[in-house]
Amino acid sequence: MDLDALLDAAAAAAEATGLHWEVRAEDTARTTISMQQGIVAEVRKVAVRGVGARLVAEGCPGYRFTNDLTPEAVRRTVAQAAEVARAHARAAGARPAPAQVQAQRIRWRTAARRWPPDAPLEEKAALLHRAHQSAAARLGKPGTIVCRWGESSGVRAVRTADGVDARCEPLLTTLQVLVTLRDGGSVRGDKEGFGGAAGLEHYAGHWEPEAIGQRAAARALDAARASQAPAGRMRALVDPVLGGILAHESFGHLTEGDVAASGYSLLKGRIGETLGSEHATVLDAGTLGIAGMGVDVPFDDQGVAARDVTILERGVFRSYLHSRETAGAEGVAPTGNARAIDIRHPPLCRMRNTSFAAGDLREEEALEALGDGIYACESLGGMPRSDGTFLFHALRGWRVQKGELAEPLKGVSLSGNILTLLRNVEGATRERHFDAWFFGGCGKFDQNGLEVSFGGPQVLVGEVTVGGEATGAGASPASGGGEPS
Image (cartoon, rainbow, N blue to C red; front, side, top):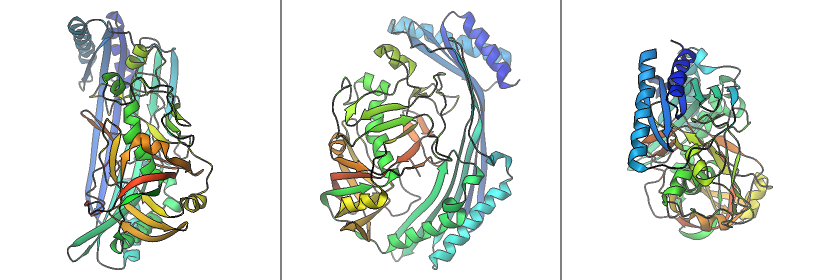
């Protein structure tokens, strides 16, 4: 049966229970191609196809899914979800009802002219070969070059008891080059790539394979000659990806409605408080409207249409990121942030495209405003905590003197408390860039690898603790922790 017929069967069975319901269907595929030293080493394709049902009894949810795509299995899955919801209600007692939304029909397809799933594998492998040749030519010495292609596509659909009928065909692709150099006992490396809601036509110009390969090799060469970073409190400029990771990891997770309601967030009950400087605004958007960039989440997995959320506005905390449940408990509208990595999981409060808002500085002005300090780029992983403290290892860094890049640095790490950092934000660039990596994603509870983007403007911070001790950061771009990999 096709997805619409399966959803018809699920919706009819759910409606007969008399409970609030949301039913989901998914038919998606993830394809990866890995090339090492110019030779294709692996091609893999994983498909997910199924139907899930989420029913709510007295505010208590029950979720079940099935990969058995027959009407009988779908109806049985709905009945099981209803049983779980009622058992949950008997055990936990009544809770606030989930927030309702207006009935609407949503249809969305990522705007790509050349849809990668329609292209032969040979064409995508050729992109990797071009990137490898370019990296090898720029490197000019022995080294390890790994090129990766990843794509995710398919159909996701949601129907709800309040009349939502939503269907989307999102797309996420990534072309990435990782270069590692060995010099005696030391290993240094770096990477470059592009990932987002991108069709094959977006891998051109600045993001053509040859340019990506050249920049990856040049960065690896810089890493090999990098000096140890200084340690102490100093001014810093963070690039779009690291700025996006700070916004997402250290602040965004604390604003998720279920985390705040549980009491594990230091932001519980602080709506309306001034938490940062007037230059600190943090946003979360379902779609970016920038060609090829970010992830497309036109509606969430509870059928709530995407809307842009201003989490922090000129330093003032304005909103949590809500599911229907957390919004119902707070008496506010849901924000479209109930997401699951796939049909096998129930939705949680999750981010989408989370970033600092653009400012009024041009990129060259940001370096001039920094003066003397550190320019920190991307991330090799880190450790954000629920009390707001964080430690992130930058993938690369530069010493900046008198507004100019002076020398590459290794072992750059940023640490502190996110609220202190927000108070020290002095500005941001007009220009923005977002990466949404197929290789990586967001983790929460047992749902790892959710498609999100990391990016925004470059952010100028008046003071932050920089660690220059050897931390293992930068040893190899392929071995980093962190969400984008």
